[in-house]
Amino acid sequence: MAETNIQETNTTGRKKLRTGKVVSNKSNKTIVVTIERQVAHPLYRKYYKQTKKIMAHDEANECNIGDTVKVIESRPLSARKRWRLVEIIERAQ
Image (tube, rainbow, N blue to C red; front, side, top):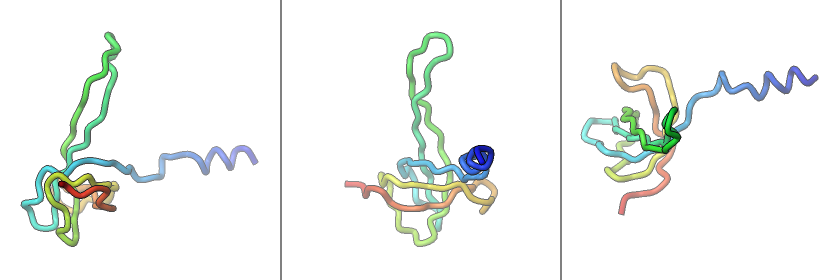
């Protein structure tokens, strides 16, 4: 019985969910999102920020630059698009 619980809680089959900020919405039905995370240096243990830009599918063209959004991993939608918009968490001021 304990083995089934371990298999159920295994996260290898789940899709990645990330939160980031929209930096571009110029393409049709596509947004560019920057995802920022803090990483500890392996030797000095000082934290620094790493950013990554990803392209996400925005079906309704509803995102604007500066919005905080939640994106989920998906099948390849184009040559560089591998993410889909889930929701807009916060609108830009």
